[in-house]
Amino acid sequence: MPINNKYHADVEEILSHRHDLDADYWTTPDNRLLKGSPFSAYSCTLMLLDLGMEPSDPILQTVSELFFNTWKPDGRFKVYPKGGILPCHTAYVVHLLCRMGYQADERIQKTFRYFLDTPYVDGGWRCNKFSYGRGPETMFMCCLSMIRQDERFLEAFVALQDKLAGNQLTVERISPKLSKLTFYKKNQPSEIMTTRYQEICMNLIDKS
Image: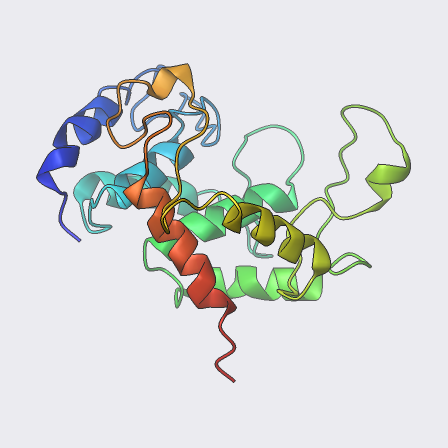
């Protein structure tokens, strides 16, 4: 999908933040690829894809290599040079790389196998990190479940449907750092958000 003319200024704004973290491609000298939201390597790549930049663009090709360089032989991605490898981090990266068309890559296939082989007892995945202490709520998964009929997912989906206005989703709150972006205006319908909602609806259709 080519970049729509109305989004060129947004693309330029995102590109202008490439060196915010003292390295190129929205990252740090030690390649902390999720650091710096909303202008992290992860978030900026997703925004550029949403705005129509092709995955074959040299910028996105370089970013994809930065993420693949963090891949481990067991299928996980280590996106921070220090600390543990959390399933949510791996989920973020595999989502991004699939958006870029790498579903068939053997490394991504290994990551899918990692997820299929390591679900927590309630069907999702659990990070063994307790930054705010332990409690009853920490005994449950904290990463997405595989089952689309899960009542928790369906409840969230219904809440999202309730926000539709004329079959479109409207931006309710914005990050001040993104206030210059035209596709992301408070109280305005969002073409991109609505497209993502429609994708969710398509993915829920039982094609079996």
